Every structure is written in structure tokens, then in C-alpha cells.
Length: 340
View 1 (tube, rainbow, N blue to C red):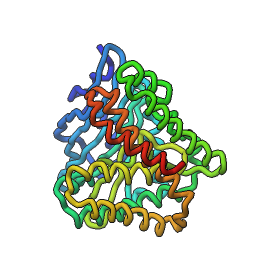
View 2: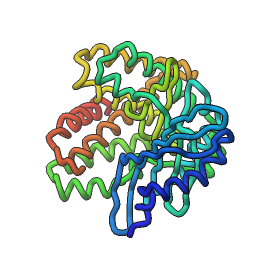
View 3: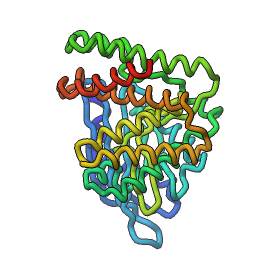
View 4: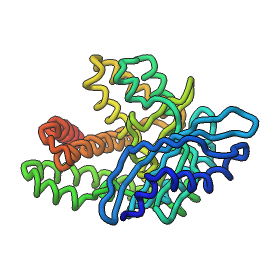
């Protein structure tokens, strides 16, 4: 039996959380009800990739019981200790504040290669996009700009102890794998995909070779990872891809994913364009940088990269909808043509 199944057992989970969690909450006397929710449950004979949520009730000393959500992300081979170290680093550098925050790291299990953390409560940005809530969208995007500026201006020296520099060609599943699978499954896209991937990685390489400076990069900046936790309060989740790279990657990824997720939900192209500009203008203000042509070019390159990642998903992903990749590929090629 795969050892990861223990994390689906009520009795085992209660014992584990009681041992690991109670010492972290001085006013907690015990754990009440536990509800187990599976967000990702890929379990094979000996390998696994799971994301589990434990909705628990904390019994407090001299206070009413408190419900909290604890998440576990576990993978049999990919590093999950990095997630714990990343969250811990960010908490140590003022991302435990009330306004701009991240999930609270709780503990790392070497046995399961799993990180446990307390989840944040709220709705993600995509929720407000689906609801056509223009006012909230604009407010959240403004806070989002402040959050990413805060991340990108953190000192990286100590982060180098647990984070690596990661370029787009190295992002899972990697350059060689992607092109190999496209050749096997959808060869009609191979020439275009090769041109796009080569252009994006060469543009990135040119900039990173021009400077020794590196920044903390979230690596998966999109509306579903942006959580409004209250009035004027924002959290960002999912730190599996946190790395050292060019901060423009987050800006390009967020603007592209924001645009892509809005297109079919909001019947207002002008509003979408305005909000993207608000994000970049506020980011520039919070980060105290100039938006020159070089930075604009880098942002566009990562905009293309984010669009290409989505296209890859449609071309070789499990849903197999290559027709949905075609407009993305065409737009990227148009950008590349105009930039050369």
C-alpha cells in the first residue's frame, strides 16, 4: 500500500496534527472535528502527487472553538520542503502582516515529502472576474501590484540557501520534453512551437547574461492564486515555483493570465486593458522603478511565455484540445514578428 494513503485516514491525521500543530498554538487544547477534502489525489503504486485540505476545529482554552483549514501538498519526487522554506522565509520578511500576506507555514514531513500550512480564507480574483465585479477586480489588481512589488524588492542573499535560479527552459516539464511530446502528439505545431520557445528563452538569456542581479519570482502569477482575504487585504498562494530569476516574469505572467481569464467572462476589452495598465503603473510606483522600453520588452517576452504555457497545456495536456492553442500560438508569433 502506498504510504501516502495514511494522510487520508482520520485517525492517523488526528494523531499527526495533534503532535505537530498543538505546540504552534499556545491557547489550543485539542483538535475537534476533521473533514478531509481532496484537491488533487494522484496515487499510483509507489508514487503520488496530492493536495489535501483538512478542515479542523481547534478547541481553545478560555475561548470559543475556532475552525481553520490546513493544507498539505505532497509529491513523491518533486521538492516540497522548498515550499515550507519559502513560506517561512516570506513570513520572516513581513509577509505575515495583515494587509499583504501568504499562508502560514506549519511543518514539513520528510517521511511524506509534504509541507503543511494554514490556508487563507477568501475568494480568489477569478471569482470576481466570473461575477463581473468590476470594482473589486480593480481594487484587487491594485493590491496585487503592491504584493508583487514587495516580493521583488526583498533581499535574496538568504533565499539562495534554498532557492535556485530557474529559467523558462527549465520550468517543468522542460524544453526538450515539451518539444518531444509535441512532435509525438501534435507534430503540426512543432515548427511554430520551436520558433516560439527558442525566441522566448533566448530573450531571457540575453537579459540575465547582462546582469548579475536576480529577484524572488513567484513563478505562477495568475488570478486563481490571488486571494482577497478582507477589505484592503490580499494573500498570494502556491509557492511551488518560487525561484530566483527576472522579476518581469511575474508581471508578464500575471497580465497575460488576467487578460486570458477575463476574455470570455467580461464583455469589455477596454476595461481589461485599463486594469492591466493599472497593475503595471501601480507596480512601477510601489517598486520605485521606471517602465522603460527594455523592461516593457521583457514583460512582453514573459507575456508570450505564459500564453505559450497555456497553449502547451492544450496541445499535449490531458484534455487534448489543440484547437484552443491555435489563437494563442498566432498571437505569440505576431508579437515575436513585431519585436524583431
